Image 1: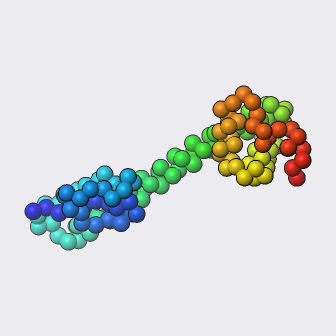
Image 2: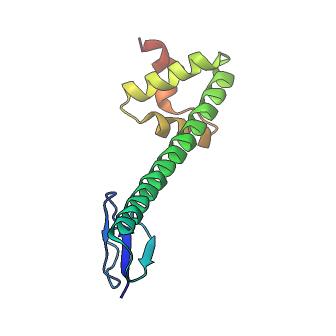
Image 3: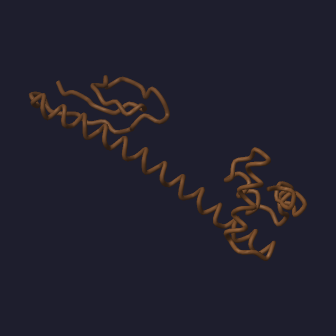
Length: 132
């Protein structure tokens, strides 16, 4: 009989029952069966590789999300720089102040700037002028 290994959503690796269902949507789909008589050292190495693969996949997803977020912020900076006829550093300052003073996530405010031809109220010239 062969052993079946997979990784858990929290990064743990271990022996999994063939009939086991995934505990969460984030759990790895990776399943590996080892032949009977596989040395324990090899099984431990396989467990570690599955664990590392899961960690790297989560990290890659986090980096992709960060990149996607950064792209929207960069687009919003360019739009605000053009609308207010200023440089991108000043546009970023406006975006950051608008998000902070209105308790809005920077990415959410940037997304609204990019999605609409109208500048969000948090970034109106009157509000920007009153902010320190």
